[in-house]
Amino acid sequence: DVKVTQSSRYLVKRTGEKVFLECVQDMDHENMFWYRQDPGLGLRLIYFSYDVKMKEKGDIPEGYSVSREKKERFSLILESASTNQTSMYLCASSSRTGEVHETQYFGPGTRLLVL
Amino acid sequence: GNSVTQMEGPVTLSEEAFLTINCTYTATGYPSLFWYVQYPGEGLQLLLKATKADDKGSNKGFEATYRKETTSFHLEKGSVQVSDSAVYFCALRGELTGGGNKLTFGTGTQLKVEL
Image (cartoon, rainbow over all chains, first blue to last red; front, side, top):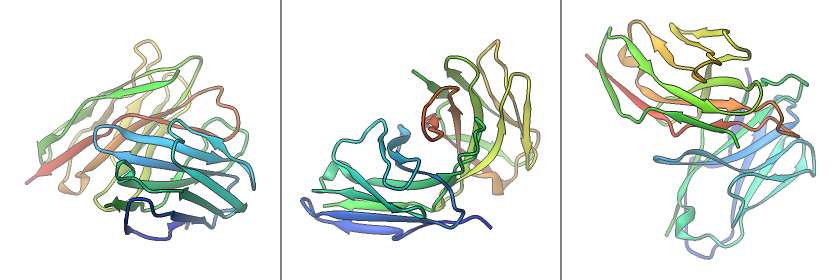
């Protein structure tokens, strides 16, 4: 059974803290993604990676960075957390098969509260 | 750029009622279209997909037909159950998105099914 896991389900941090969100997939997928989900805005892509050490900005990369040192792991970093980064963060992965419609598999999400 | 518009919720139905959730899109070329479902407290799961015009995706009693002439991919189910209560996201994967397979999501529609 395919699996994407995220390091925490709930996280509370203070403004200015450095925050690490970890995502691990066990499907040997090339592509990995970080989204944030906010009411009324749906899912917005923060960053994605299509290979180890490769990363590309999504639609809202400001205030975030990512790291992909191993194929199975994709980390999202908030260098200095701010209250407007309070959100649900979702990680996803997919295979790069050359076909247009590869399915993305999602983790359970991390609900981050920044005080 | 690509965009997805879906009807706002919440949609509240009685059990066994007919469900339609509207979704329209803007994209160049021939995108692939998806419906994802998010049950309470969980990440997103793929519900169904369609990769070319006139394709019908179906799963768990849900159906959606890719209509290029109306740029739509409406989700339907003939008889909803309480267990269908969730948030439903329409999404598209554009034809030309470079590395990875980025998805563009709608804002989500919450469905509540009551006895």
